[in-house]
Image 1: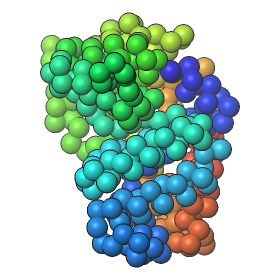
Image 2: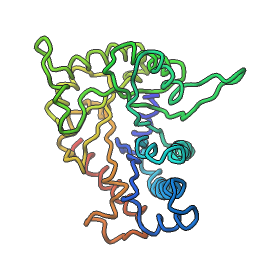
Image 3: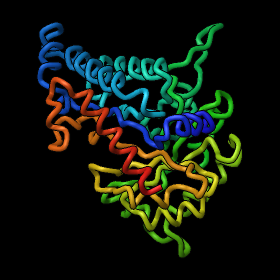
Image 4: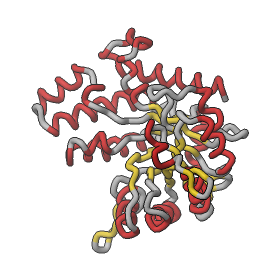
Length: 305
């Protein structure tokens, strides 16, 4: 699966993914109003507004990008109706030729992880038939429970040609409360990185493993260390743009071959029309604002690479 992502990145010259993390506050008033007129101020109405918003952004950007990253929490908050739109969004993106990174940060005891893996990147058996649930191409995974919490996801990757991104050094301000703590003289994130390399050795897809790592753009010196520790691990890099990460901060995430990382931007793209730089597009043309934000992001990153 990681080869497919690399091929898409090479084709588009865009080592990025668009985070489809919609909040109702991001959606232009005219879109919300239309959905509420049809479905009322209900969970179904909110879900429809999210779907209309997502579809417009996808239609305006799919030819420029290799991948998207929908954060499932933004859909779960609207219950079953929201999850229906999550699945609808995944399917629509794949129809457009995009690879989908399901940002669900799953991870639990072995049997529960196996069920999560089946639902998101694997298959579930129903009588004599098998089905794929959410069927994303990649999934983010929390490694806190150790190997028996991660191995079911690795097994699902091998069985279904899928990929993972395991949380290693996250971009949020308080990540250091645990991740930076020293254990036997090493920060915890380095120990997690070593395990990611070990897990990934069972799941190689050419030069890189299908088991990747989440490494935040907001800690560039740490990403430099992690790149050396994980030369054959692909990085999913959050934190660019709205969270403060710059293109210069990203360069250590990449290898000398120009590969090794895919950089996420969420509200910086999907809510671009709200920013002064794209105000000329207005709410009516929010999709075009997102397209321009993608073009600008790609230019910015490639300038440094």
